[in-house]
Length: 50
Image 1: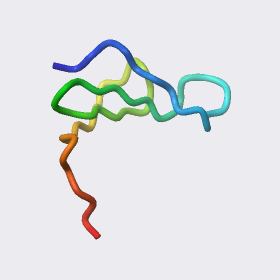
Image 2: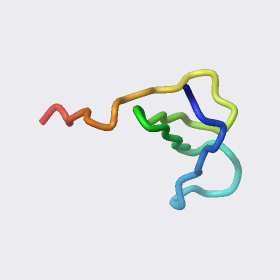
Image 3: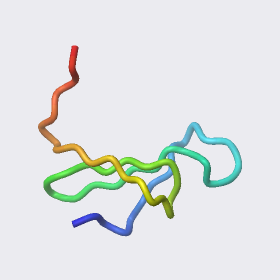
Image 4: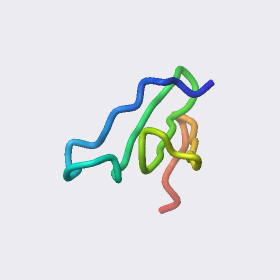
């Protein structure tokens, strides 16, 4: 379930064209605006590819 509580990156300029993140108990959701149509979801346990 994707939460409605999106947080905008503190490194953003003015406006909503920025990285937004949201999480729930199982996953982390990342998008480029708070009303995005594309959302990338990863589990909390996901490891980087390196």
